[in-house]
Image 1 (cartoon, helix red, strand yellow):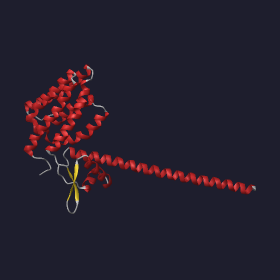
Image 2 (image 1 turned 180 degrees about the vertical axis):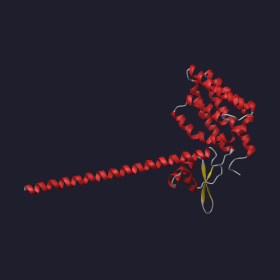
Image 3 (image 1 turned 30 degrees about the horizontal axis):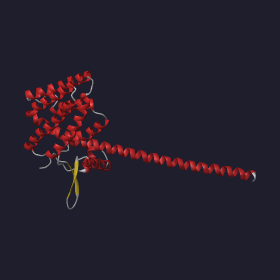
Length: 267
C-alpha cells in the first residue's frame, strides 16, 4: 500500500470513529433529556397530588365538589398532564371518585360518610396501637419524658372542655399532636409509611368535625389519661388497647355529630 493510501485509510478510520463517538454522545444526551423530562413530570405529579390532597383535607375542596381540571390547573399553575396524573392517584387512594352518566364522566371529591369513617378510624387505631406497643417498651426515662409532654397537651384539652373555649390551639391540633407524639415514639419505617397513607384521609373528618365534639371532649381526655397511665406502666397490651379504644370511641362521637349535621357531600 502506498503511503498516500495508508494515510487516507487512517483518516477514514479516524473519521468513522469520530462519527460513532458523535452518535454515542448524541444518543446519551437524548437519554439524559428524556430521563430528566420523566423525573420532572414525576415531580410535578407528586407536587400536584400533595397540593390537591391538602385542599381536600383542609376542606378547601368540599366533599361532593365537582372537580374542574382547568380550575385546578389555574389554581396550581400547572398543566393538565400532572393534574390528571394527580387525580388518578387521588382516586386510587379514595379522595376523589368518578361519577358517570350517559354522556360523560366527572371527578368529584369523595363524600364524608359514617361507613367510611368507621373503616378509617378502625385502621388508624390499629396502626397507632402497634406503635404504642413499641413505645411502651422504651426505657423508663424516655417514657416519663414522653408522658410529661402528653400530659401538657391533654391539660390544654381539659381546659377547653371545662371552659368551652376554642381560643389558642384548636381541638384538632392538640389531639393530633398528642397522637403524633405517641406514634412517633414507637413507629418504625413501615408503620410510618402506612400511617402517612391513611392519616390524611381520617384527617378530613377530624378537621371538619373536631370543634363539634366539644361536649364529648371530657371523654376523650379521660381516654388520653388511660393512654398516659399505660405508657408510664410500660404495659404494651394496655397501651395498644387504650389507643385503639380512643379511636373507636372517637368514631362513635363523630357518628353522633354526623347524625346531626349529615354526611358531607351526600346531600
